Length: 451
Image (tube, rainbow, N blue to C red; front, side):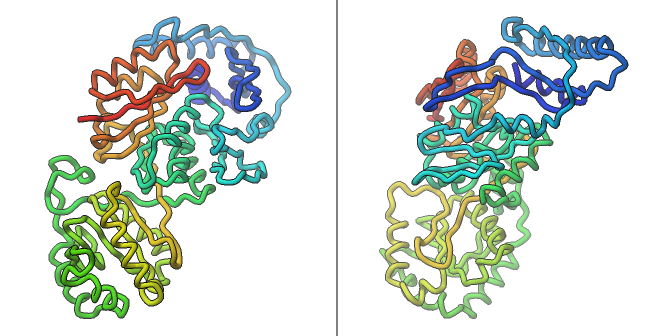
């Protein structure tokens, strides 16, 4: 209950900080812990300790009754006895940092506090982090269980959702593992900026939410059963004709190889409208888009615009290949071979692809917002939900709804003795167990949507 009790004090008192269990590790194994006692540091603005004690007792009683009404038992809540002790005032927002060192979650993943200089090992993924007021430092077992599941099961190019994102640590890891797009949400508005700052520290770009789908179909983004407006269609058809008549030299060169089904027997169209955009080349039967980029696409504003555009196309089911103009001039054979490889890749999903050589390459992007699983009208290849067991059980249908068929989900935040509640919930939702991963008194489940 440390996290929930901490939140009670942050919301109701002038709270400088908290110290949860102080743990010591050796070779990834915990060798000591002060678990069971939570230390909370408050400004004493009361006339006496008795006044402060009265308010604490009152707030804890009210909060305890609320948790009991939500289905927790007295055993779940444990003892909330407390003592008050006067301490010399210190800057606890800095003091706690002295106890936090580099956390090696696995042999290949390390979480590094922002104020520590660290040289990563070969092929080691590091996440620079300043959690601020948000949950998720990488030291807690529940976070580590999700990180292990991501490392083991997430595929490059997956679209990932991080439900209850906190500091954004799991979203950042998903991007560093090769996700094409990560959506993160949390019900605590104070953590959104924290997550964005942490993403920025790790070189992860933030994007605006993609625009609504076109065509009036049941749109996962515009809203189920709500028809999107055709605001761009007429203008885009006229503009596409104009672009075809004024093709660039690079477009003419590539089109000479793509037209009339020359490339592997695949039919391509040029200057093709898709929703609000016009793409350079598109193979409708293969759901492939080929975009030619000049040096202006290396400018920050255009990089962000391209990511928003690619995210939209990716959500429509297109594999997007971005090719630099200089590759058309200098490596046309490599360009054609690469396009053929993408066409014939049997494992190809809807994801963003880039030519390995060239003037740059695409890195994934994140979108963070205030929200919850029941408000999401999108589908993902992998979902992480690090939330308390009784909340997981309550929102399981919403979590299932955002999974694509065949997609995986990591469920964490579960005390081992409370695992049955979550098992019952995911089985009722028709989700299939892939693996249970345990760490200390915590457990997690990797489940799969099969229908």
